Image (cartoon, rainbow, N blue to C red; front, top):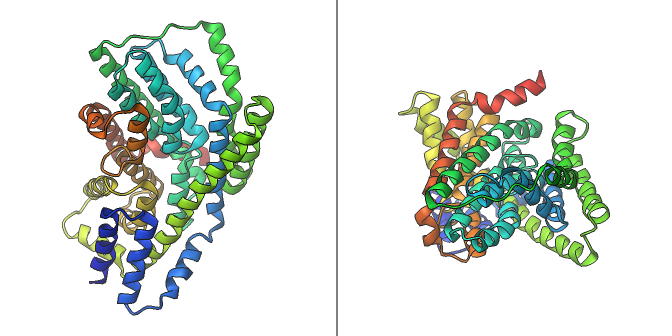
Length: 427
C-alpha cells in the first residue's frame, strides 16, 4: 500500500501540473506520514541528497556553459560546422547536427544546446526555404548528442544517484562513441529527408575560410579537452575541472572574444543560478523519494519481478528500455535519473550489466523522452523557437525519432561500442 501511495500520488501531482520537485516532496511526505515515520526525515534526506561534494560540479558546469553560450562561442562553432558540412544535401540541417556535437562538448545540456544552436539555426533554415517542421525536428533530435559528450551533467547526476562510486571519467569516455553514432545517424536522416524534399546545399567557403573558422573556434573547443583529458589523466577531479572550466570560459569570452560585458555577465549569473536552483531542489526531493524506495525495498521487488519471467540480460535490458521510454513521456530527465537509478541499477547489476554501460542507456533513453510529448522540454523549446505546434512537429519527426531509437538499441545491445574507450584509457 505504501508503494502504491508513493507512486500514485506522485503521478497524480504530475498530471495536475505540480512541478516535479514539489510532486516528489509531496508524495514522499504523504508516504512518511502513512508509515508513521517522523516528518523530519524529509528534511534530513533532502539535506543528505545535496550534501555530496561531487554535485558541486553540476552548477559550475552549468555556469561555464552559460558563459560560453552568451559569450560568442556558439556563433563560432556554427560557422565552423557550416564550412565543414554545409555543402552536403540539406546543408543547414547538417550544420545544425554538427554544431550540436561541438556545442554539446561546451554546454553538456540538451536544453542549452537547442536554445543556442536551434535558436540560431531554426530561423536561418526557415528563411532559406526549409520547412519549419524539418528545421525543428533536426535541431531537437540533434540536441540529444549533448547528453553523451563531456561535460554532460546528466552523467554526473547518474554517478551521484548510483552512490558516487562510479568513475565520472569512465562515464565521459563511454559516451563519446555513442555521441558520434548519434551524430552520424542524425546527419544521415537529415540528408535522406532533405533529398526527398528537394532541399539544397550551402556553398563551400574555401579552405582558407575553413582554417580561419577553425582557429576562431579552437579556444571554445579547448574547453572539451580541458575537462575530459584533465579528469581522465587524474590531474584534477570533476569538481576541480568544473571550476577551471568556469575560469577558462570567462577568459575566452571576456578577454579573447571580448563579447562578455557586465550586462551579459549579470544575466548569465542570474540564469545559471535559476537553473541550478531548480536542479538542486529536484535532486534534494528525489533523495527523499529514493530513500523511501530503499526503505520499502522496491529495488529488491523489481529484481524479483523481472527474474520471475526474464532469464537473460538482453530480455531484462529490453524491458527496462521499454519502461524508461514510457516514463520519459511524462518525466523530465533529471528526476527520471534520480528515481530510476536506485530501482533499475541493482537489476542491471544482478544480470551482469556493466553500471557504466547501463548509465549511458538510461541517459540516452531518458533523452529520447525529451523530444517526446507530453512532457518533452527540448521538444517544447524547439517548437517555440520554430513557431509551430507540437502536433505539426510530431507528424514528421518519426524518421529522426526512429534513428535515435536505433542508436539506443545499438548502444544497449553492443556494449563494447561504449566500453572499449574507457577500458583502453585504463590500460
